[in-house]
Length: 67
Image 1 (cartoon, rainbow, N blue to C red):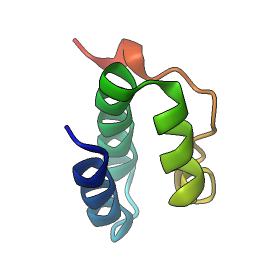
Image 2: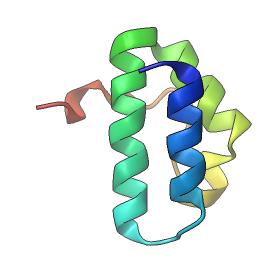
Image 3: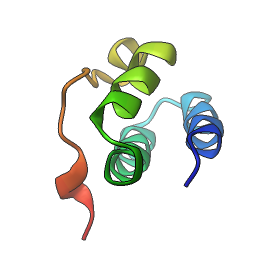
């Protein structure tokens, strides 16, 4: 997944505010982390204010969410 595509998908999830959307964002970040690394995840978290919206913090390891 490209970073632009991840950004688009996360922005769609931000339009809603349920726990399901938080989980969807976590799965997207997991994919980003595996393909692009932690720094890309941290950039998206900061850029899209995911700490404020979903309580997701830079430095969090999302790679274990993939099955």
